[in-house]
Image 1 (cartoon, rainbow, N blue to C red):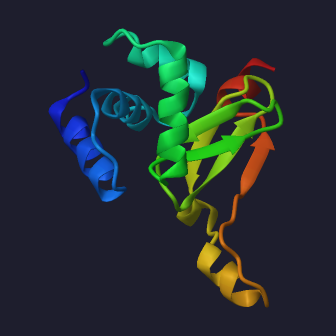
Image 2 (image 1 turned 180 degrees about the vertical axis):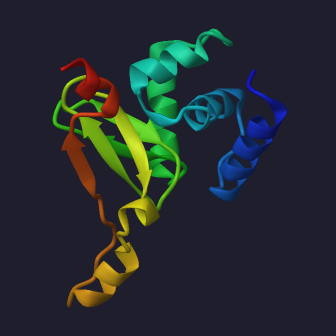
Length: 142
């Protein structure tokens, strides 16, 4: 299992969301939280099964439950593959070469979603800012 600090954090997040901190949920959340990028369901499945014997369907159902209850984010890029991450006030960068999706803090982008919500004459429930281009790693190989 991941370190005790991330597991405690996963337990706390699940309880905050009104979800029971089952082993499957904690393992999936720990796997997502330990990554510096948004992960596909396959990457999460591969990460979880390194520590625990879980089938693919259970991982997918757990991801749906976590997403439906607001514990994780889900984004779909140009490749239509869903990526999962934790955190609310960030955007995503999708590399069109390697397919990796990075989470970027909106403060780094100088993007204030609350200002955008206030400036428009309609009720905005959420904003999904997605950037596409070529990441540093891929740009060096071109």
